[in-house]
Structures are given as C-alpha cells and as structure tokens.
Length: 274
Length: 200
Image (cartoon, rainbow over all chains, first blue to last red):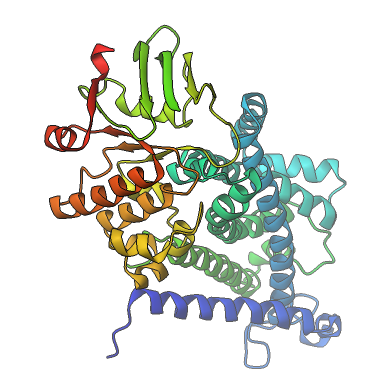
C-alpha cells in the first residue's frame, strides 16, 4: 500500500473530478441533436446495453439526453457562478473601502437578499425577465452573490487593518501598490473557492426552477426538464427516466462541491501542511 | 531637530480617554525610554508618533512641521509581533525590500542568512522575522525609530545583537529612538532618559 499525504490526495481528487466534469461538458457539446430525435420504434425501453439509461416515451435515448442536459446545466452554472463572483468581489471591495455610507447600503442589500429565500427571488427575477435561458442566467447571477460579498468585505476590511498593510503605507507605498500586491493575492483564493462552491448551488437552482416550469423552455434538454417530464411517467413504472438523470445531477453537484473543498484546503496556508 | 508630541490626547470613543495632555519630545541622536503600566497607552502613543493613528486632540510635530501623510514616513515603528507585520503571502526577500534595499553588511550584522530570503514568513521563527522587520524600518530616510517591545520575545543574546546594530546605526545616522519596554535593565542600559507615561 502506497501511503500518500493529503496534498497528493488533493491533487488526485481534483484531477479526477475535473476530468469527469470536463468529459461531461465536452461530450454533451459534441453530441449532435440527431442522436435525440424521436424514434418511435424503441419507445419506453428499460435500461439495456444499447440504451444504458433506457429510452423515454418518444424513443429518445436517455443517456444522450442526460449528458446534453448536464453539459447545458454546467454551462449555465458556470456563467451564473462567474457573474455572481464578479458582483460579490466588486461589491465586497466597495463596501470595505468606500466609507460608511457605501458600506451601509451594500450591507443592507446583502441582508435584503439573504432574507428572501433564494428560489423565490430567482423565480421573481426570472419571471420579470420573461423566463428562458436569459431569465435563468441573470436570475442566478443576481441571487448568489450576497454571502460571498460578506466574506470578501470582511477579508478586505481585515487586510486594511493588518499591520503589514499599514506598514506598507508608512514605507511610502501607494494605494494602488497595496491593492495589487497586498490585497489581491489574499482575495484570489476566496475568488476561486467562491466560484466552485457557488457552482453546485447555481446548477441545483437552475434544475429546481426549470423543474417548476419557470426556467428553461421545454424543448431544451435541460436536466430540470428531464426530471419534471419523467415525473408524469413515474407512476407507470418507468423508473429509469428519473433515477439516472437524478443520479447524474447528484454526481456533478457533489463533484463540484468536492473540488471547491479540496481547493480551499489547498490554497489556505494554515491548512496547507495537513 | 526633534519629534514632539504637544498636548496629545487619545480615545477610541468620545469622552473616554486613554490618556490626555501628553507632552514629550525626542531629539535626534537621543535614545529615550517609555514606560508605564499595561493599558496606559504606550503602544498607542507610539502609533500616533509614527502616523499609524491620528490623535483625538493635540498635535505631533517633526522638526517643527506636521507629520507627512504621504511617501516614506520619517518615523518608523517596529511592532512587538513580527508575524503580524509581514505579509504571509510574500517571500522574505520582497518583505525586506519593500521600503529600501538594505546592504549585505547590515543583513550580516543582524544575523540574517542569505537563504532565508527565499523562504516564506511561516518558515522562520519570531526572532528571525523580527530581524527582517528591524532591517526594513532602518531605511536611509528614517529619522526616528519607535521600538515597541521590539526585542521582548527574543533571547538575551539575540536582543543584544539586534540592539547593538540598531544603536550603531542610530549613532551613524543621528537617528532618535523611542524605546517602549517593560524591561528596566534594557532601558537603564541604553536610554539617556526615561519617560513614564502616567506622569506626563
């Protein structure tokens, strides 16, 4: 038995999860839509070797549909999480550096957004924007920033008071130098970890809102659509329609969560030697 | 040529004063000790003199004019805890060279070894880090040095080594030093006079 330390284990875990996620994304993008056209000869087939995830009531292969749905969800999640992190970083820095009034306004906004359940806010924003892909992405981006904003605000505030930052100022360094050389390197880990931890949230919320019928339009192969459609056929004994796509969603979300966690312990200098 | 505190008062909240009506001065080339009980405001006074804090009342004058708010500050402070005074994400070389480039002779006299420069702060001990902080504060434009418990956590040999370098440097550059410490032996040995913060 080869013993590996936590750092090596971290590298292995993150490599495996990254490969899985990238594979899903690429396969989903490469498969053409011809593979999921209706094929009435092979309707309602349970899982078999030629159709590992079975087929639905229109004869579409569920494996291909799931892969396409997942890659779409990953894409939507990535855009939404990235924009959320951008919002969080800019608001967090603004709150910490631009004085009490700005801080008050931004903190109030954070409290406001945190006091309303994510999903309700998401449905409202998505509905106002007319639903569809655009509504979901903007809705996700606008609802996932508050908690990260708090973290970044606190981090920047703490850095501003740090002795080495204050000393830097007395050594004649400019605000710009301090921002770039002292503050930014401390924010990069928050930025990356925030991105990876927001990701599963965004995907789950995207699936949830689509499942509820307020999100992506029904002809897109999104995971939420697949799940909500399969509900109707569940009572007729077609369990494979919901089980496999659901498991895939779980797998992808867990993979991202894991990636965020290991990344966090990787970049945190106090935990780096564990 | 002196650093003066004129009728200084400081409090974190209104009408709750840590100290008031403090008058004191340090001339160039002079080494002055500052003592007082814990919580009396020694460190705060040090921070005010070096521009880290603004006094709630009164003013600080350097050679007759107010302290500069920009550029290299002529009054440098060395903190008690060096771990907090260095950026944990910088290598020692960057930390040392943030203000000026100390020559090899100074580094050698402070006992800073060449291969420490490539290390991260968490790979050095407190005493080793403090040598870097001292070297960093001794830039050519430093006119006054405020040593806030600078060597308290070091062993006596290292203490002596660091103080010898600092005192030498002060003499050569005609620098004034304010030594904040609880150690009576140290103060009696190096200071020309001692101020008690509770009696000024």
